Length: 194
Length: 194
DNA sequence: ATCAATAATTGATTTAGATCAAGCGAATTT
DNA sequence: AAATTCGCTTGATCTAAATCAATTATTGAT
Image 1 (cartoon, chains in turn yellow, red, green, blue):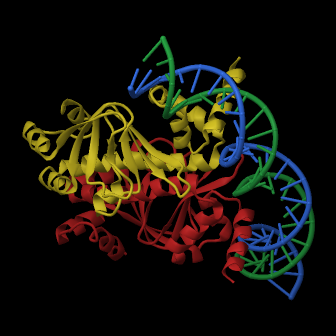
Image 2: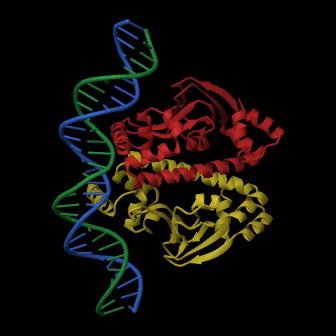
Image 3: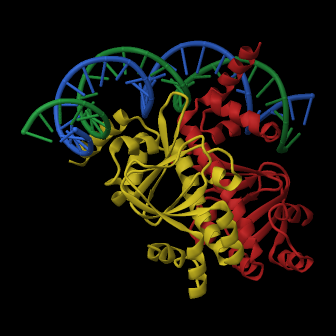
C-alpha cells in the first residue's frame, strides 16, 4: 500500500526508515469504487490525496451545468482542492473515481504535523508544486495559443498511456473543447496521416 | 533593498537574524531600466528573481509572432522561467521590465545552497508555489468557462491596482484576448452600468 | 440476452471573438 | 516643436469552435 508513495517521494528526497514509519501514521488508506466521490463541490475538501491505484478526476461545474475537468490523477499522483484543503474554505472542485481506486488520505492538521516533524517533506512538496506549476503555466499558454487540434496532438504525444483510459468526452472537457469538436478533429488527423 | 523580501518571506515563515544575514549573501541586487530584458526566450533563465521595486512581465512569442503574457510581477512578487531555471533548459519566456525596476537575483546553485542551509526556505517556497498553483488552476478553468467580458471583470475586481499600471493591449494578451476585443467589451461595460 | 443509459459520430446553424483595415490621440524621441 | 512610434478605438469581415439536433455505437445493468 505504501510502497508506491515512498517510491514517489524518494524520487525527490531521501527518507530514513524512521521517517517512513512516522509518515505512515499520518495517512489513512481508503478504497474508492468507480464513480464514488472524494469531495463534492461546495463542501470542504478535508484531504490531500495520494492515488496509489486507479484514476480520479477533479472537475468544476459552471453556471450552465457544464463540467470542466481540472485534472486527471492516475496512480502516483496527488489530488485535492488545494485552496479548500489549505484554507478550509469550500471546494471549487468535485473529485471522483473514474476507476476502482486506492488512495492515501492526509488531513490538513496531519499535513502540518508531517511537514514540521519531517521537514524534508516541505522540500518534497516544494518540488512537487514547482513541477505542477510549470505544467499548469504551459497549459494556460497553450489554451491561448494553440488550436483545438494542436491541443489534442500535444496531449496525445505527451500522455499516450493516460489518454487510453479516458473517455473522449472527458478528454474534451479537460482540453476545453466540446465533445463534437474533438470527435471531428480526430477524423481529420487520421485522414491527414494517410 | 532587502527589507521588502524579508517582509514577504516572514509573512509565511520565521527567520532568525543569522538566517537573514546568510540569505542576503545568496542574492545579487540589480537595477533594470524600463524595457530592459532579464531573460530572452531561447536562452537559459539563470535567475530566480524577486522584484523589490517596479514591474516586470514574462511572455512567450508564438509561431506567428504574437506575444502571450504569462505573468505580471510587481514589487513583492517572484518571476522566472521556472522550467529553465530549475532544469537548465532553454527559456520558454522572455522577461523584461515594464517600469524602471529593482530586483534581487539568485542563481540555481545558490538557490540549492539556500534551501539546504536554511531549510525553512523550502517551506517558504512550498507555500509560495502552492498559492501560485491555486491561482493558475483558477485561471485555466476561467479560460475555459468565462467569456471575454467575465475574464476582464474578474481581473478588474481582483487586481484593480495592478490594472492601472498595465497598458490595455498587454492586459488583453494576459487574458488571451485581442486588443480590439478588450477595447470593445470595455465600452459595453461602461454603457451597461448607466 | 435484452433493455437502458451513456458515448461517439455526423450534419446544419450560430456565434464569440479574431483578423484586417483605417483613423486618431497620446507619448516618446530627436 | 516636429516627427515618429505606440496605444486605443471603431467598422467590416471572417472563422474556429460552440450549439442544436438527430443517429448510431458501446457499455452497463437487470
